Image 1: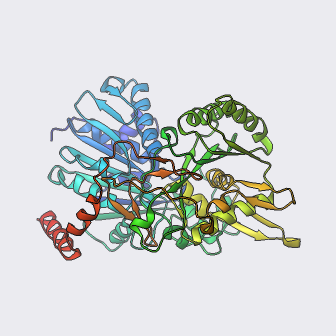
Image 2: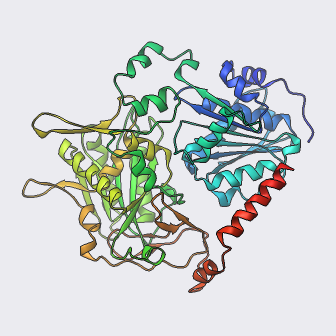
Image 3: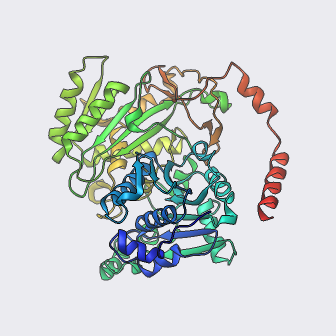
Length: 532
C-alpha cells in the first residue's frame, strides 16, 4: 500500500496536536507487534494515543482504512468528532479532510477513519485496506468482537496492519482483553503488553494518589491508579454478580427509543464536575421460550445515557422531553434534591403539555432511606436473575464502584468509592426503581411489585427475529438485539432493521446448527490458515 512521506508519530503529535507524546505513549505507538495491548490507569493518555495513531496511520497510507471500535455508540461518535475537529482546525491538516460525518472522516488521499460501536455485525464487511483496528475500552466489549476485529486486521497483515487495544483493566481471566495482555507478558511474539500506572503522567499529583490507597477500596486503587486487574471485595455490587448478569446485548441509544413499549426513565441532574444521566428500564419479553423453567419471572434491562460534563440543565430537560415524544415514558422519576428541583419541575411541565397517554411522575427528594431502597431493589433483581445489564462502561464501572457503610443507629450510606468517581448513571438507575415514601411513612420502590412473579403480569410473546442468541455470564439466553416490552403492559418495540422470521424458523435453524465439534474444527482450521 503506497505511503506518503510523513515524519514519525512523535513529530506528527507535536505539529498537529501541539503536544509532546510521553515516553510510554511513544513506546506503544511504535510497537512492532501485530497486537498492542495497553492496560491503563485513569488520565494516562489512552484517548490521545488512539487519536494520534489513527490520524497518523490514515495520513501516512493512501487509500487505507482505520477502524476505531468503542464500547458504545455515543463513545464512537465522540472519537470521530474529535478527530475531525482537530484535523479541520489545524492549518497543517485542514486541507487533508475531504468531509467528516458523525462516524466517518474521509481524507483527500483516499483514506478514511471509521468509528463504530462494539457490534460484531457492523464490523463484518471490513477487511480489505484496513491497516489499523483500535479497540477503545476493550474490557467492556463482548468477546465476539475479538474474532471480528482480529480477522478484519488479518486481511492486511502483509501490509503491516495492526491492532491496538486500550482500556482500564476490566473483565475476568477469560476475557480477550485480559488474555491478550497476559499473552504479551508471556513473551508471545504477536503481542506487546504495556501497563500504565498513574506515575507515567507527570501532571498528576503523585503524593495525593499515594494517599488515595488508604481512602478507597483496593479494587478501585488497582484499576484506576495502578492499571491492574482486581476483583472488588465488599462492594455493594460484587463484580462476580455484575459479570453473571451482563450480556452482549445491543440496545437502542437513548435518542433512538421509540413506541410501542413504554418504559421507566430515571434522571439524575448534574452540574460542574457531575454529569446529568438517564437510565431507562424496559422488560425483556418472551424469555421463557429460550429458557425453559423461566416462566413467570419478569426480566428487565437498562438503557443508560450520560450527557457531557457542563451540559446546561435546560438542554437536558429538552432532550428528555424530546425522547418522551418518541418513547412515551410510562413512569418518569427525577431527582429533586439540590440543583434538581428546577429541572424536575421543568421536565414534568414540558411532558405534561404533550397530553398523550397517561404518565406517572415520581419527583424524588433523595434521602439515605430512598437511596438504600432503590439500590436494594437493583441488587435484589440482579441476585434473582431478573435484571440484564448491557456491557456499558459507565454503568458497570459505577455499579462496581459503589460501597455501603453501616453507621450509627442503623444509618446506611451508599456512595461511590471516592469523591473523584462519578455515580451519575448509577443514581439514575436507582431513581428508575421508583423510590417513594408511602402514606404510612415507609419507603418503597414502584419497580418491586412490577418485578414480583406472583403478580403474573402478562408477558408478551417475543417475535422470531433474525438475530443471534447471546447469554449472560449466568447462562440466561436472550436475543442479541432484543425486543423491548413495556414495564406495565404488553406493548413491544422491535429493534430497527431486524427481520422477523416466519414462525418456527429459528427453532429449525438451531436444530440444523453445526455441533460444537464441527465449530471447534472450523476454528482450528482458521487459526492454521492465519498462521500460514
